[in-house]
Image (cartoon, rainbow, N blue to C red):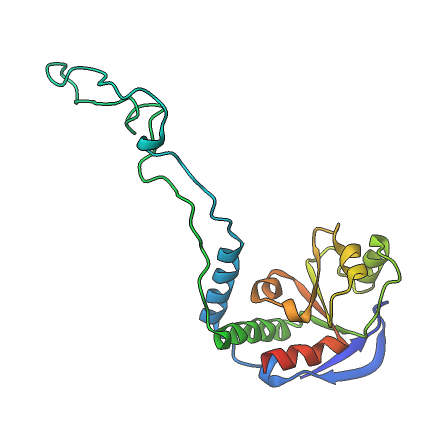
Length: 208
């Protein structure tokens, strides 16, 4: 699978690179993708939701009316869930939403997501570049060189680059991630992947 290599201005360098068929050219497994994205989103949840049940409501416990002869249902407490201001029936309680997935399945999910992007021609390979200082305007110019300033983009670098990260942080549709933190959710969430040349070997090492 051959892709052209571009420089940071969006111009072709004249070089090409072959992407691994074992990573960018497999038959995607939709169920693996579903499970990995589900785990990613579950792990983002704080799980601190809480509603008070009848035992936790502050209020009097006196019997509000006599048991019989009223013509209505019996009632023993104002804290009952059937009254306004009462406790909630089976309300949410704090819990942990994390669950485990096997490493092989997570690798399959990422390879499947990358294969979808390769099929859709939603991958751009660029030569490695750096920004001397964090500057959002410079990162916008970089995206404009590829006509991607209006699309959701994910720039995958070989390692953490604070200048690139800080330059993209204020842009709602731009993300920068090192290849070691690549996830199925991030791959699918972006309209276009921009992968630096040096990060390809890291991706292949992690997913082989």
